[in-house]
Amino acid sequence: MTKAESARGRAPRSTTARRLAPGLLVAAAGTAVAFGLNELVPAISALTVAVVLGVLVASFVPPAAQDGLRWATKKFLRLGVVLLGFQLGLGEVFRLGAGTVLAVVVTVLVSFFGTILAGRLVGVSRGMALLVGTGFSICGASAIAAMDSVTESDREEVATAVTLVTLYGSAAIALVPLAGRALGLGPQRFGEWAGLSVHEVAQVVAAASPAGAAAVATAVVVKLTRVVLLAPMVAGVSIVRRRRHGATAGKRPPLVPLFVLGFLATMAVRSSGVVPAPVLSATSVVTTLLFAAALFGLGSGVRIGALLRTGRRGLALGAVSTVLVALVAYGTLTLTGGA
Image (cartoon, rainbow, N blue to C red; front, side, top):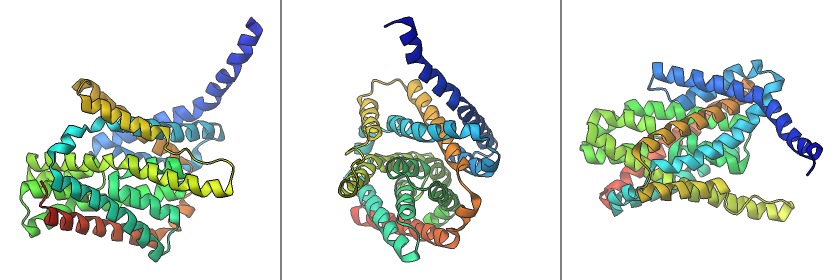
């Protein structure tokens, strides 16, 4: 290859980097602000701050930054899902006991499909119901982001779903401890119920804290066990979409998205025990950074007028899904006996 040919081969990459740089810088700034606000108010997730901040500054983002923000939204979401697998090893799941694991599976499946059905009844779009069902039944904003990667939903729907999971998850921080005391749940059972009922990991920690450290530890493991179901859920939706697209278009989504396989691979590596604890801590931070940058980019493409149009119907769906998750979780734990 001549020098001229080599230069021509490198030029597109250089041009692409220059085209993406403004958006990536804006995403980095938004992520930094989101983390700063999270440090000031730890109860508010950095992911929540990121998407809300993106919505607020959407009108001020220059056109030159749009390509980079779109790139960050797509690529960082998928990489974040891959690294999410490092947060849970299969050994921790097995230590929960068959009853609790069964309760996790039943709760996730019933609340997921129940939310989709409720979405039809309250009149929200199919895509919106799917995102809310995913976020509320599995792991909040991270799950919504992962599902969006295979459904390519409207940005307004994704932002609304993240807002709803934040709103109702925050309410659960106060309501779940009160309900736990009213039901007379001990620390172990309360931790299981909180881990099954509350949406985001940070919200789970806050909700379980009044019952003590043992309850928090149990709640986090149960919560992360729900995360394991993210891979088969996203893969299942991808397969369904692939079949439907096969009948109407030449291009179909992949049978199982590569980032889902990556998630399973990192979970297997974590389960092997070869990854040092400092590396696991670092990957947890990097995962949150990637999701925050992606959600900021997502929010920057939202128009508030379109977001508000889902208003009361979205709020109704969020309320139904929250109650459904809590009731199914309590019922299944009671029937299976938990751990």
